[in-house]
Amino acid sequence: MNQLVEKVRALVKSGEVRISEHGYDELAEDSLTAKEVLGGIEEAIVVEEYPNYPKGACILLLQKDKSRSPVHVVWGIPKGHDSPAVLVTAYRPDPEQWNESFTKRR
Picture 1 (cartoon, helix red, strand yellow):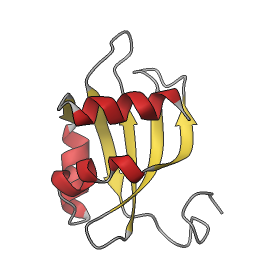
Picture 2: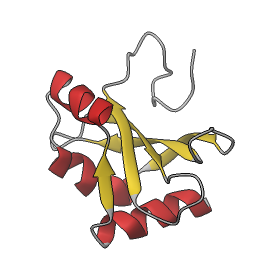
Picture 3: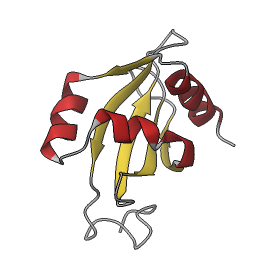
Picture 4: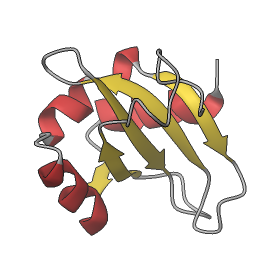
């Protein structure tokens, strides 16, 4: 399994989480709560990895909201640090831009 996703899961479980300002804006825009996104991390599926992102490695995960609808969440850990897990953004994926499972771009 992906080491970054395991590290993010462990940080979320221990409460070492930060939500970026952009992340809060995107959660609100798509009527998502931080609680449901944090709660969906255990079942998350890796969609894309960004190991060389300038601010630190990031990962795009497919998660589910409280009604089991798909949500894409980008998580990262700041470059040069071991914590916290940062929720960079979260959004409801556009079915026109993603395959049926929301795991591959069209």
